Image 1 (cartoon, rainbow, N blue to C red):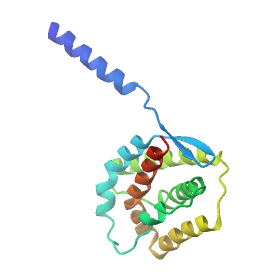
Image 2 (tube, rainbow, N blue to C red; image 1 turned 30 degrees about the vertical axis):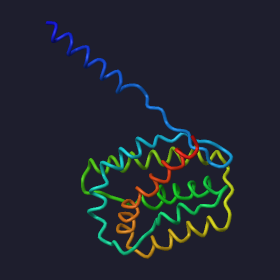
Image 3 (cartoon, rainbow, N blue to C red; image 1 turned 45 degrees about the vertical axis):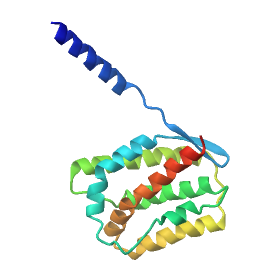
Image 4 (cartoon, one colour; image 1 turned 60 degrees about the vertical axis):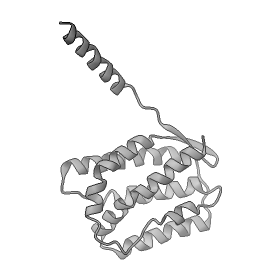
Length: 174
């Protein structure tokens, strides 16, 4: 009986920890702040990453180079992130399809998280300079060179670059 009560207590403790809302992390973007659940984004992406990378057979093309993201000018972080989120929501997630239903659910969860962040950033009224727009235009130009499903697969395979950048932004702003 004691063992059963001990097990029940442990189970309740675990369930209460799991049911606690997980706090997001504040991302300071130029003149405003948004709450981002980077841990959830990483969790969703890590479950589909192997599938995404396995389907990415066009290694020679690079859409999101780390140096492109790292070279975002001061005062343009909000704009760049807003445009990257727009790209993923409107072009990538809408054209990405996995043959596995579970993988599709996780990519949908990622898309929904991006929509939520995008909605919050929209309230920021980011100012975009020409150089930032050119960077996004270069991503779009590489994207349209590929067949649409292949392009979406490629962009999904490079999503870890965006997530690492977001994580770096959160750490820098603490």
